[in-house]
Image 1 (cartoon, helix red, strand yellow):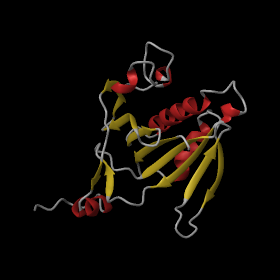
Image 2 (cartoon, helix red, strand yellow; image 1 turned 45 degrees about the vertical axis):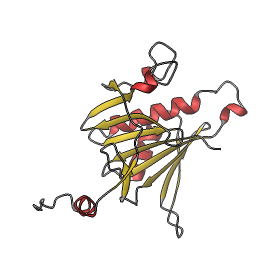
Image 3 (cartoon, helix red, strand yellow; image 1 turned 120 degrees about the vertical axis):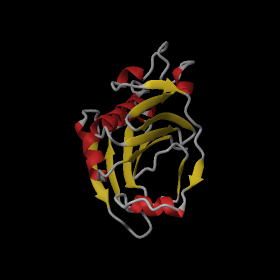
Image 4 (cartoon, helix red, strand yellow; image 1 turned 135 degrees about the vertical axis):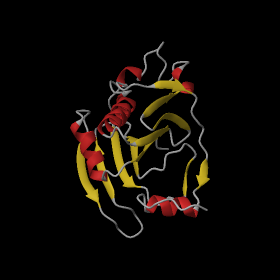
Length: 192
């Protein structure tokens, strides 16, 4: 079973621009060649470190989304490469690289709405909407990711934030009207 963290952004930036931010952040990621459309597989931009693989793709299907107010255009998947199995001195590299990578993306694209779902979408970790960054209250206690009383990843968050309840987010159907409006963001709203 793989361990994945999924980060979603609503931004006009390209897949390659997100990858470049991760590579240039000094986290340890190296760019990999893009994988271009091979039939049913989407175009992918890739990066990796010894502990973490990164896959960036455009969100094609806009008919369903998480019920958190963000309609993502790009998805960034951070996959655990299980480096700790061969090197016991690296047990937290995957989680640290993921956290640092996501914070680098939030800094690089300050106007982008975004959210992070950890461990195969089972746990909302953070949400940024309209410039406001919220960390999950559930993960801010009992030795969890943002617990300030325990060793945590909170010191890696160098952006202003609040801690509040988040999720779980269910998937909702996006109406045809919203899909049309998203496809033409400069179109004037028409009264019903």
